[in-house]
Image 1 (cartoon, rainbow, N blue to C red):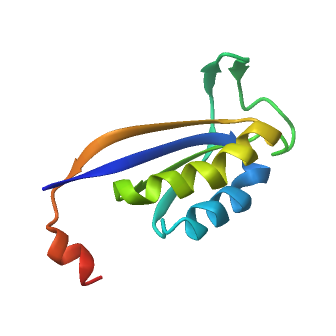
Image 2 (image 1 turned 90 degrees about the horizontal axis):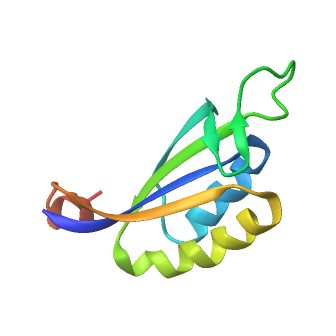
Image 3 (image 1 turned 60 degrees about the horizontal axis):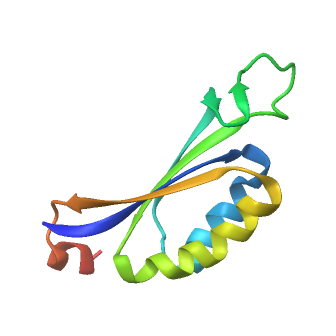
Length: 104
């Protein structure tokens, strides 16, 4: 087991490619994207009652080694500040061995 950083981003779907490009440029090459996320945050409730996908939110989850975190923040923060959204980062344990990860 080893410590990794979990990155959770909720943003407008129009910014998905910019965010994923930022993760990739930071050395984070794996992620999952969940579309049509609804919920309630500081800006109120985000619902799926729009006729189009204009207001659709996405949830992006990715994991990285701690040394990749600073470049991730440098790439993602300006996107979120300009277009809105939120990002949470936490410490989690990955159960695969580092040797296994290095061979991928």
